[in-house]
Image (cartoon, rainbow, N blue to C red; front, side, top):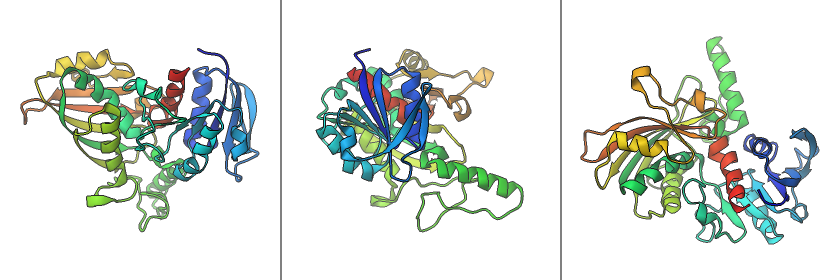
Amino acid sequence: MANKVKGAVVGATGMVGQKMVEVLAERKFPYSGLKLLASARSAGQSVMVGGKDYRVEEIAPAVFDGVDYAFFSAGESISKEYGPEAAKRGAVVIDDSNAFRMDDDVPLVVPEVNPEAARKHQGIIANPNCSTIQMVVVLQPLQNRVPLKRVVAATYQAVSGAGREAVDELKDQSRAFLDGQEVKAEYIPQKGARRNYQIAFNLVPQLDVFVEDDYCREEIKMVNESRKIMELPGLALTGTTVRVPVINGHSMALNVEFEGSITAEEARDLLKRAPGVKVEDDPDQLLYPMPLYADGDDAVYVGRIRADHSIEYGLNLWVVADNIRKGAATNSVQIAELLL
């Protein structure tokens, strides 16, 4: 890679931020210095990175002086407040929140799909939503062969996507339920919601808040972001997003209609050669992707590839990925690697 650079991770004590720090070390990202930044509440904590102990600093505009790459994973409000400040001071901001994704002058990048977009940045690059990332990594190779006509997605999204507190709540609820004790709910669909629901041994068909036409914001994000990344503004795409009692690893069922003929075997061969994709598809051996086995991996897994006999040109696919790694931390680091 290129010369040594100075990096910063904003939200370094959160679930995604900690994973970013881990991925930077794993992938031997060439930093000569690394700042770990968080709120005043977390400042002063120490984090071990690559055998070296780093002290977490409180985020402030001046801390970005001299920083080349700033990875943001502290939420929309922090990104809006400090992202432009970091960019103004010379850092390339790679933001994992929803703050800038649909801004016309901010590239929305998945390296396997639209790497060239990253080089058009004006100081800020957006990392897409986790479910969007794994979907477009699979759809793009198919679109390159036969144009997409319509996509229907149903997601089965892990609790880690709602944060560490939600993961702890799932574990606590599971213990309480199995022990016959009262189950307390505070974090699903999100903290502060009008109602909160048990997620242990349950499914909750809401991610983020409800917006227009009774869709939740996660469903709208998937549609708008996919169209932008794939440069298909008219793509017919709809989805239903569901929170499931899985700790980590998002899954989705995709029903894809094409403008022309493509067989399941052709799709399987295309996806085997696609960057960032692992095909696990052998029904005879009962082999198919599952979140349990995608956990800790950077690949997007695809299986259950089969013809949809209800339409002329259709396929069904099952897609699974680690939402904290490829869905957030790893994709952000890969964007920075593109620029290096």
